[in-house]
Length: 398
Image 1 (cartoon, rainbow, N blue to C red):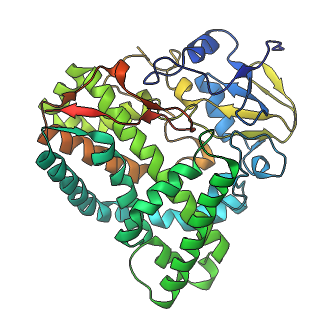
Image 2 (spheres, rainbow, N blue to C red; image 1 turned 180 degrees about the vertical axis):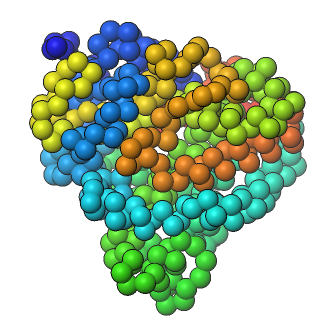
Image 3 (tube, rainbow, N blue to C red; image 1 turned 90 degrees about the vertical axis):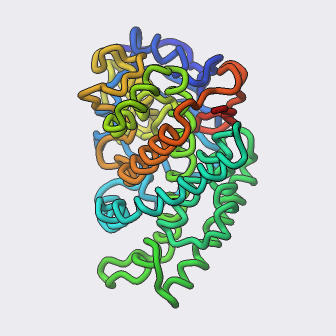
């Protein structure tokens, strides 16, 4: 099968950013695969259907390492980190992931839960004291993941604000120049390099200290450690911030679902999975892969060297897999969503993200059961210039 349609500009524009762009539904019903033009001007295929995305995310013929090479098609105006977990293929990826997994074991995440609860409680206390109205983004959604990821890494509390700013600039697609993005990356790396030196001199709390002082055969070199830290900051801040704000917005727009969670807190863990499936916190939900050979995918032939972009937010609305895919249902079961990815690059911090979302939503529902939007959803201003999606502010009342 061939696909001769002219490329569509991507990201797709959307008048309602709290929903996936309507082009995705059209593609699922028609081509499934379509050529797009990325913000850099590079061309890529985009995969809209669930099964095609699962295969794309797990087939070793679609490479992340190749996407980090010079002159490879990419979505952002800056080169990818070639030694990042997110841009490696096996066996290098397997080795690094095995070591990095120690930062996100169930036991380590369980140990972090009391601290997350204290942090959420403090943020909600401050929100209540300043109320009866607040911007949920600046009050909770943005500061929480910065505080949590800094605790995970062992970054001093006084540096958290800088980290949040660097992460946002580093993720920019069109509202920062290539030079500004590179400057943010350099600032992150320089800071982390200095922190690693300090952790080796004086071991302490946090995964950077653990990894920096690991046995020789399991130790990462300095560049790997720095890149690992950058990866955690970027992946663990923006995505969680947008999932919190987008998830709360979805529940407030579906009031009966919010009320059901208020009446049945035991549904909270399942609700988190459903909100990850339902909330379009990214323009596609995936990162570019490069075909290492000619591969048939979704009925089209992807040529060697061509780029393919997963569209997980589209896959998670595929009626071939999900009953009532455009409905928010906190009791949905089973829920085989791809929101945390699939295959070897499945989100390393998924358990931590689940903990943050569950504790935050549970705290909000218990503390502010009457929470409601202060403005119509159509009046919200959205962050539309990065690969992440979320309201710039979420005014609420209670």
